[in-house]
Structure formats: structure tokens, C-alpha cells
Length: 357
Image 1 (spheres, rainbow, N blue to C red):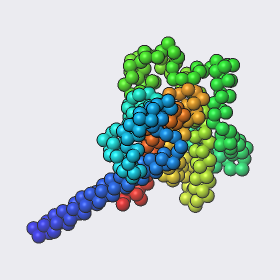
Image 2: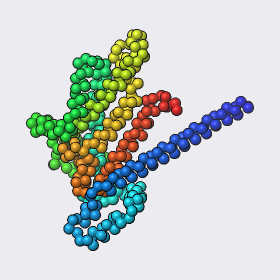
Image 3: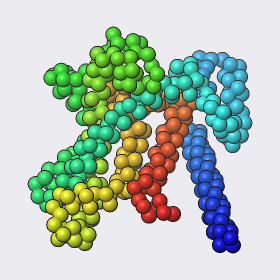
Image 4: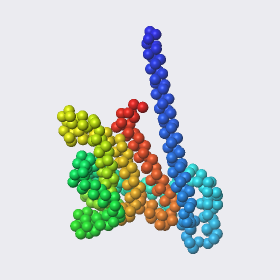
């Protein structure tokens, strides 16, 4: 009886420690998330104050009277100290108020919810291309180090790093759309398909497939494939280079030699033994690549007139629409935070040492 009580006491003690650990980690996670968000908004806000753009003129125009200018100046809270302005801005953000866009005369949050799915669709498809091509290419280059496949893959990757994305986009449009006619032109859909699809997710391929409008699916894919391939080429160059580096290190380890001695084929040793050991650092590489495509597709979206977040921020900046610029920048930073958190979760899934902690 006493033994059962002692076992029960030990089990209860472990459950208490586990609950305390969960509470501590959750509190630490929330605190770090809050600090990161406040830091992101502070940096973004104070940098915007260093620009020479006058937000009052963006609202009232350069022909407004001095009385109208002063009234708008006070309405925007610009007569307060910059720290008070930041406090007001942060309070509005927490409540979901990103302000009004001067360019669209709509709430910035509504604009961001409208344009972000287009960027998400483009970046996701580009990342899929980068992973499906870049990872096998990096493994092949490492397995054939110093031979012609390695040299070819490294040259292709170097070209992807060196050539500007906007130049590749213009050349791609000229060749594959203008000359060969293999793909559609700019935008997400042909003009006569505009407003035909019922937007549910904002992702044309998914929404058109839900409605079983397969002609629109084909048209949307024809518009998507070229800009996604351009971005995917940039992504696969980075992923292939990092995969090659990780694999070269693992293939030099003794456990690979031991697997070969035990009768394992070379490619079995590569994929079955070496490759799983690079998954954890590879997750970071893919996550950073994905995040960079989500925030760095500005030039590609501009070249292809892709109505996403990058094009929205660019137009807002040219029109001195600082609420839209700040809102878009905060969304980009939030995406980085979210992807980093997702990477941490995937670490624990693929690395048993982290799962045991």
C-alpha cells in the first residue's frame, strides 16, 4: 500500500513539474513574441518618421489651405511627441486598426487581407519549385563533388544568385510570352476572367478549383508559372548551395563509411543515412528562403503586375501612403516571426534530442 502511495506521489510530482514546464515555456513564448512585435513596430514606426514624406500633404493635397493643413495635422496627432504618437499607433494596431489608405481610401487592414493571398500564392509555388529542384540538385552536387554534375549545378546556382530578378522577369516575358506564347502575360488572370471567381481564400487556383471552373484554373496557372519559376530559380540556387554544403559535411562522417562497409549502396547511404541528418539545418534554410520570397517579391510583382503585397507597398510608397507602407512592413515582419516559430516546431519534430528536452 505504501509502495503504491509512493508511486502515486512520484507520478503526481512529475505531472506537476510537467505542468510547470509547460506554463513557463508558454509564458516565455508569449513574452518573446510580445517583445519582438513591439520592437518590430517601434523600428518601423520611428524609421518612417525619418523620411521626408509629409503625411499631411498626402491627405489634404499640396493645394490645401493652411487652415486645412493645420486641422489635418492635429487630427493625425502630429502635434504630439513622437513617443505619444507611437503609443497611439501601437494601441490602434492591437485593436486591428492599421489606419486608412490614402491611395485606395479603404482601411489598410482590408487592403492587406486582399493583396496578401496573391503574394502567398506566388511565394509558396516558388518555394515548392525551389525545394523540389534545389534539394536533389544539392544532394547530387555533394555526391559527385568535383565532377561535372557538381560544376554544372554550382554554375547554375551562381547564375541564379548573380542575375537580377527583374532582368530575368523581363527576359522571361519577352521569350516565353512575347515570342513563344507558352505562358500568359502579366497579372493573375486574363481580363475577361476578372470578377468571375468567387473569392474565398483569395488564392485563385484554389477558389477556381472549388467552383470547378477548370478553364480559369488553367488560365491562372498559365499566369503563375513564369513569375513563380523566376522566383523559384532564385530560391533553388540558395537551397541547392546550402544542401550541397550540408551533405558534403555529412558524407565525410564515419557512420556513412560504416554503412558502406556493411553493404549499403552508395545512394542508399546518401538518402537513408546522411540526408536525414541535414533536415534540421535544411528546415532553417527553406524557412528563410520562403520568408525572403514573401517579402522580397517586390520587383517580380512589379514586372509581372502581380497584385500582391510587394506591389501594394511599392505603390503606397510612391504615393506617400505611409499607413499602407507601415502596415505592409509589419505584415512582412510578422511573417518572419511566424516562420521562425514554425521552424522551431519542426526542429522538435525532426530532431529527437530536442523532443527529449
